[in-house]
Image (cartoon, rainbow, N blue to C red; front, side, top):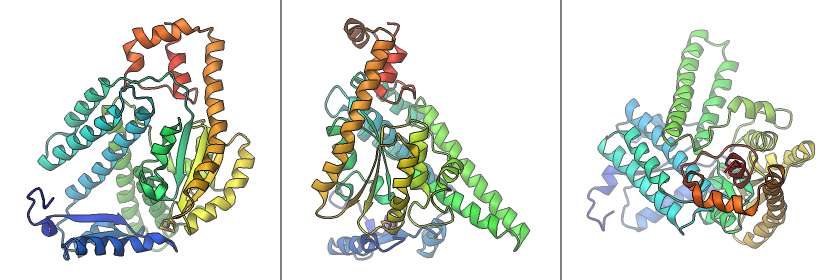
Length: 394
Ligand code: SF4
């Protein structure tokens, strides 16, 4: 920014990152970030590490930033839109025809949203523009690929870089379609936890509790409605958020939902939700070495896998020297998932007596079946089988 002529960087910017909740390497990141910016010549640059129980507004107020409600909601909306763009990116990237066309779309989308927020122009208009760009992108959906849901420790499973061994892009290289979890799910989880906490202490002051509950429910509804509205503007291509109530009900027999820290019971709940509702062929839980909440979760995942019967689940720890090990363990399960996805595709071909010429005709004559903005049906699980079934009459 300085090289581009930006002035007063220390005054006008700050960096927000998540804080640690346990005995892991995460606790050291904040200090490392501080050292990096100080060594780069920005000794007064502000870095804010949010602890799970801290309110963002209070923290920012303490630091003297003028954060009003409007600003706070804009911040939340920015996160929701970033999630939605990422969700679409991982749905289209595995099927792109022109190399890196999905990356160019994502770069443009981020730029459009950033400019919209910077200049206070219309967000719906910006999202419509992004959707139009999406429609012009050509994909080849008819290649069976297994869907792989990435869950685990919060920071690791949203990581696209070295902290998770570039898991999402590596899975794409290995012929899979990764399904990443939006940050918004975690945001909803924090609100859900707070609601449970407040309800259990209702005997203290009923009026105060009622007031707090009303605010939390308003916040929850706002997150949900905004997320769904932005999804709608992108043609409902991104998935909806998982229901917190459902995740808790699924996880409860295995993991105490009152235990917080990290993703709490959500890892167990997401695994069951994915398998029961046939959302993906395989689930990976990724965490940094030493993550206590996620390790506790792994303690019950074997029982969950046994109870679910048809679950392909693999749990991996990231450390500085375990990449080859982790990837070979994932590949073993991925091979099984690939076979299931290929069988699904074959079953559709057999069931509807589709021949090779029909598939080629579909590829060539129905532009809609190759458009990145196509809303792929949820069933069967694999994208290729779902698209083929939808256009089987061609
Ligand atoms: S969830 Fe795990 S890795 Fe993340 S901050 Fe807590 S202990 Fe550390």
